[in-house]
Length: 497
Image (cartoon, rainbow, N blue to C red; front, top):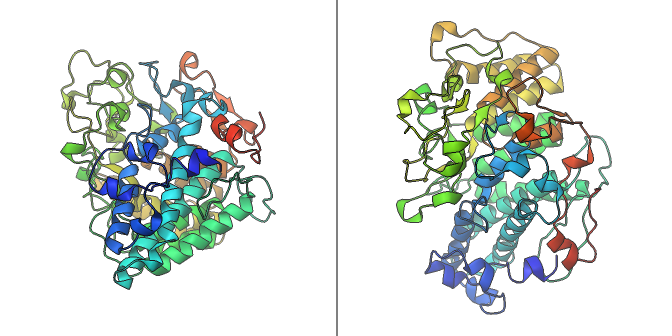
């Protein structure tokens, strides 16, 4: 990385952040104004830096559609087949939906994740490389360093999934991934291989898990050992290490209950939900206006985008016969598009199969807590991993059925799955698609499984989506390296055009 990412974008003015909620500190204060030694003299100051990372998960980074990780969840699902745009609205996310933005090196959408994940990495590096010398209890040092290591691993994992080629189990994986950043410097660095990136991700997560054992966090925006294990379960699933993925997913969800069916239709906006493992809460004095996740994905916030372009679910997924009519997950979508329970004003466009999974605080208030990890995902990882490893269909059925039973509103309608082999895998993946709709998993799921995008036969409008299918392995599965980075770093290599 050149000065582009590791000079103006390093978290250096930590003391400034501690006394202000102004997000501009990340952009405007050069690293030489506040030395790292001063910023990390105590664990208290280091904790302030860590809280800055927590806050960066949902504030506006630059453009309106860049509300941290929540906006990336929208981008990833826009690239799949299950999230459907019902009109062009006011333009936001249209080029992502059309598979154009991430393939333009000058597009802000293409630059956004590169900028965000590497900046969080730089901030985490400042903590990791200085915390051992801070004054404070060792338990606080361990807790702070463990969370920073988790963030660094999570960022590299996200980056390599977007800008690199997929990981192939049993192969050398010498294909280009992304630069591994363990220290902050202004020298351009080449891309590491996919294998090297994943090895570093696992190393960081192993260190984080050891440091976070026994840590009781104050709230779910902080990272504990369950979250670290949950992220490692995601990584293992992507690496097709089925045994490790199943084991970690089961460990990560231990002691965490699935939500009630009443909670499932409450709007996915409250991180006090017992099933949520990791999320951000947005308090009233941090109103997110028109860059909020809920300004694009809720059904009730009165934004131009939502009024004219309510988001819908793929009709083939919604109407799949494996889902009972009383499956609570289907209750978060309205085939009629009327949403009578929400009492929407007359200027809200009605479209069939639109979502009410996400509900904002009000028509004039776009706030809502943002979910990054739930126990349901861990059940699905466990089920998929057991089903794919072979010879463990019973364990896969158990994990899947536990989730399915919790989602059935009429107990008499629940029938345990007895599928085996490929039929069981197919059932698990369909449940994964419905369960995690709108939470940002579809693009990376298709990529890790080397499957195509197929939007045909559903309710996608060709005039809106433009692209109806993308073959597995197509070069378009790799996001282009942003032009800013290509210009600043002479060692950088662009992906195939």
